[in-house]
Amino acid sequence: MEKKIYVVGLEEGIEEKVNTTVSAVAGVTSCVANTSKCQVLVNFDESVGGIEAAIDAAISSCGVDVL
Image 1 (cartoon, rainbow, N blue to C red):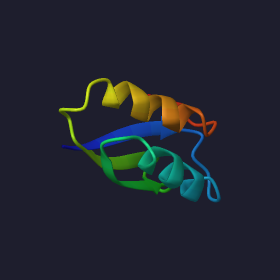
Image 2 (spheres, rainbow, N blue to C red):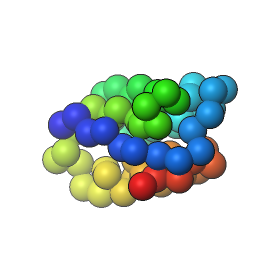
Image 3 (cartoon, one colour):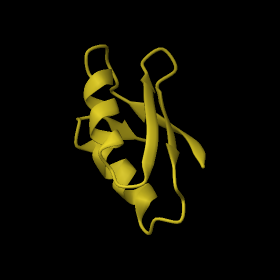
């Protein structure tokens, strides 16, 4: 499943940290953080239990607020 997650506080320089942190979540196949759109585009296996909460937590751990 592909999901656009809108965020606040995503600045240049943090993009790579968000990409790396979210990509480490089990079931995530790709992650692209985009400062100009204030969003994180994530492809993931929706059959993995609790994955959406884990993705949100990973983004938040980088100091970025999920809307």
